Length: 379
Image (cartoon, rainbow, N blue to C red; front, top):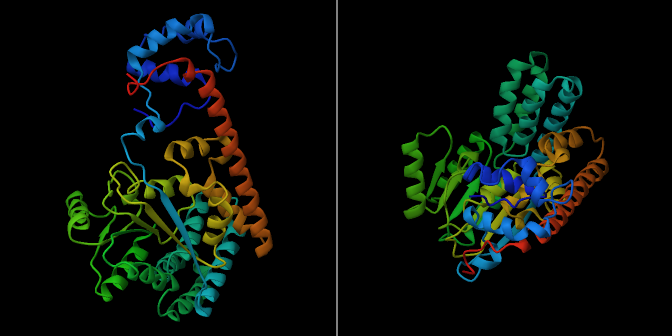
């Protein structure tokens, strides 16, 4: 069972059938010689079309979204980006901690094993003050020569009473306290901060993360479905869970990989969802997340794309190292204008790949599947 469209080669169809019924189509060499007329394996031999139709009908059922629309209701996705102006204290902390990461990146960029921790730290800087504290405390032992600088940054953290993001989150929830909200963050320190802040406002909240036992997570899901309106989840809740009873997703912080964003939204936007899904994306003005939202995700219309389309797009050779490309573009920029230019170029690249893949799929679909009747719906 696959939701991902076959991209651009009959070989993909052949391989899928080999899994279901090995040997049905013979060897690839014999199959391609008999049924295919071009080197790229995209065009069916019209003389053998009827015979191949009979073979495919034994093992393949193809149901398109347009066919099932008669029977299943697909609700809409309504994304909204909340770009907030930070306080002076937050702005100074973001600027100084980002400069700290940028300095480390300039020194360590040739060492692959240090790139991931620095990327993670930059994501934490955009997440919450609590998350920044955690990241800085870890760096004290890792970079003892920078301890004076790190302690200076920790002091700046102490100057912030309440994050601007949490104020915006409360405003979103206050507009409809009776609705259910699935809030995602990448970091447990931020998760704890959100839960505590919402509980202080007497809101019913539960959490979901990878450190919880299976039983604890099952209880959290059950509570969210029945009694509690807010679930704050790490990425552990981004896969394998079904939350169709909730129609509000809040990305408190953003993963830099579009696939992870889609996995989050896909928890609620699935068969059984009765409402349009509202997706709230929070970003601080001037942060890397604002650039990601405005210059990358908006260009490919991420929040309207389906998981199958995204899988195809980001399996492409040039788009496999998404997080690394984003991080290095940001770190290597010396001005806000340069950041915008580099992110705009990344967005154009993604947009170009998206169009190329879409055109290829449409052409392949026209050449191959329109020849066959593989739908059980029509029968």
